[in-house]
Figure 1: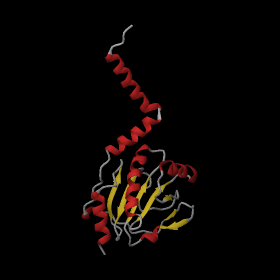
Figure 2: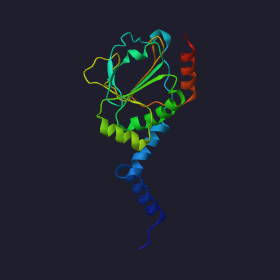
Figure 3: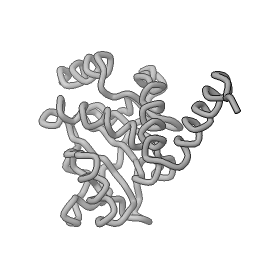
Figure 4: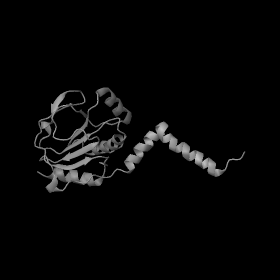
Length: 188
């Protein structure tokens, strides 16, 4: 029995599609596709920007110590809410890692999850992420919505939310974001 080229190509195509559901190739392929279709988030117009007025809220750092967000008053702040089990978060966190590498010593980063430490630490090690992880205290008051994951906020020195990105991933490693952050850092 002779198999035609069309049949072989169909079998290969079906195998490739199935691999996206049952192999690690599929996982990394989906992460890559998410990154491919992520774009730089647009700043909110100045007249429509929300303001953070309450900096008195508690979080936990990577060592599980409590701290108050008040320490970031008067600084440029980046907040990202994420979950290790959400595939879009993996793609976004890769761009956040590059953003952190460029600005980690200039702005405050809060990469916030509500998960327990052991799975988060394993996730961080597996993906070689080095940004600081912050842990949400469930039930603690927050000036932002902790329910939408992934979501991100870029806040200026006066507490104005310059970027609020919900529902979907964003590319934080690009010239538009870097130019915006540089301008936010330059303001008094």
